[in-house]
Length: 257
Image (tube, rainbow, N blue to C red):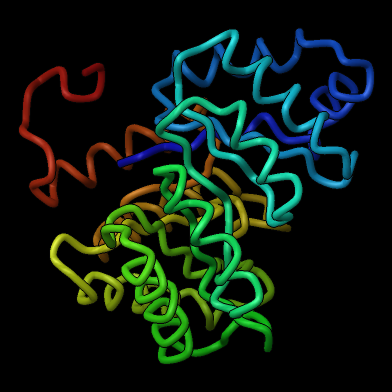
């Protein structure tokens, strides 16, 4: 399971203030904590705080100065990505493209050129799909474009677009089925990812819902999640699910390992 740390995001007040004041302390704090918790990537998201690529570059350089964990460059703006990728160490993940041609035809070649992996949201110009078939169709377009650009399918992280359980309960089973069908595209299959906290948006049992959904998604082939890597129960549940799926070798200390 690849855990992508969600915390370096200007949606959080301390990160927003740090970027505004150019104070590295909150970014360094959360980069260090998430790296120590075992994050495979650290998502760095400038959000709506600024449209200046220099601010994203400052965030990335600050995080990279604190830890060795690879960066997930979280922007759908090609102008910001073009500058941010220049200061990011090799092995980065780009978050994200969609299946819409105007986005896919720009973002995928950038990922290919720089040897990056990329998250593909299975939506297009018509918006977020509500059916399994449309999710799979859009996912197929993303994988096909990656292969056209010379990328192996497992460098693509397909995001089925998780909907809030509280407001769109019927979508949960469709998302899980789409993840299962993504595994049929290739061998090895593309990676799959989700913004995990979306499933519990607006609920009173966030941690329980997040970890239950993640365990179910792992059973269907989910290989990564943008999540709270500090949530020990969530991480331990995911590791145990992978153990039961025979993706890890059992040892008494498997959680600590």
